[in-house]
Image (cartoon, rainbow, N blue to C red; front, side, top):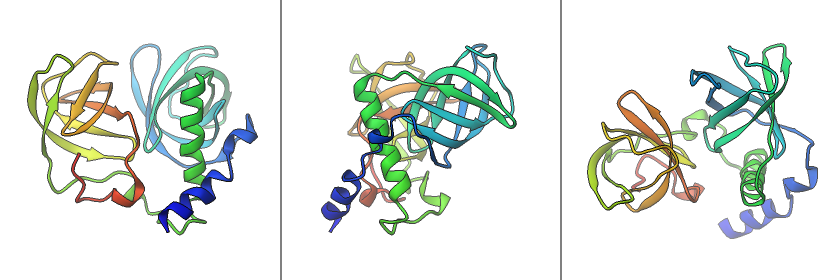
Length: 203
């Protein structure tokens, strides 16, 4: 049955819309050029841009990095200011654009697929929080999982590998995309399957 649902989503490729934005509500954080981070929420989005509710606006043309629950890391330049934030213009590589199109398609079709809208399922704290972080050079470190989304995880650790470096959490590999006080954020190479995403998950 799950296979049929996936096929039904695949028949509605968001890529056909190109720059037509769809309303998607996702929470996240963004970082301006001065490295300051702020909370945000998406208003609408396409593979070419996103409009954000944002407390602090950057300058037109400023590059911004955004970390969105369920979607991971995106970046772009501020194209215009809005009443409650700003709009980013994104120019993504083909593979990243296709991945984002698939993620957006899943988000806008989840009601039709009978999936729960409840925000509890956007990010969960697993029952088993202790795991092992393996760095690119083979070093391993015990870490604690703070929470997990479909696209990544936040870890409590004093080890902070360079941004962009590859790490493995348990058996799940990804890229370090954020440093914060006492931990790191990792974006998975492949999103977690929806049917296996709950507090009993192990990476």
